[in-house]
View 1 (cartoon, helix red, strand yellow):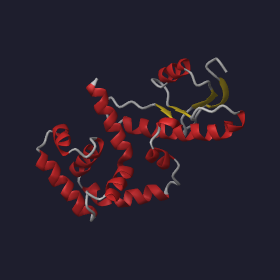
View 2 (cartoon, one colour; view 1 turned 90 degrees about the vertical axis):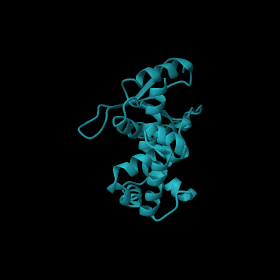
View 3 (tube, one colour; view 1 turned 60 degrees about the vertical axis):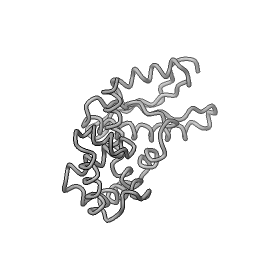
View 4 (cartoon, one colour; view 1 turned 45 degrees about the vertical axis):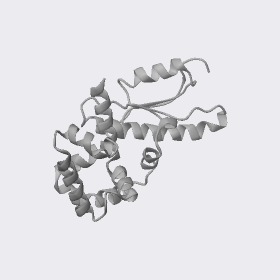
Length: 197
């Protein structure tokens, strides 16, 4: 396939779903440029490149997963000025994003919400935590981003520990918090990257 693609399916969307188009396209620089351009107006999810026609059903499911990730990121990006991640290639997605996109909602969503429920009482704690995670757990950079003293960030993180009942130095705690706030963390990282340009 040398052109942009062969249209496989179109979903005009309805009151509950976003419009989508499914296409089988070549893995080429032209297509990558086209997808980037399409991503300025549309939400795009693509599978990993594949070469055997028999792999088409699996690639279609991968593209659906990537599209779900793109939709979640677009929803969160609306909350953060400048955040842009509307084209998602499944072969570039981190493991946490992939797992969360394949989750069995609402069970996992409920579990994550319950894990951080005690933090929802304080917006400053949640903001500090999201910034801390987005900036690779760097207290100094987090403080500069929040325009507060580093000790204020440390205080807020200690308060999070108290409310969660688990230490922030625990890998499991950080992993669970990242999963719970991943959309916010990625949107903030996009915003920071956008503003740095």
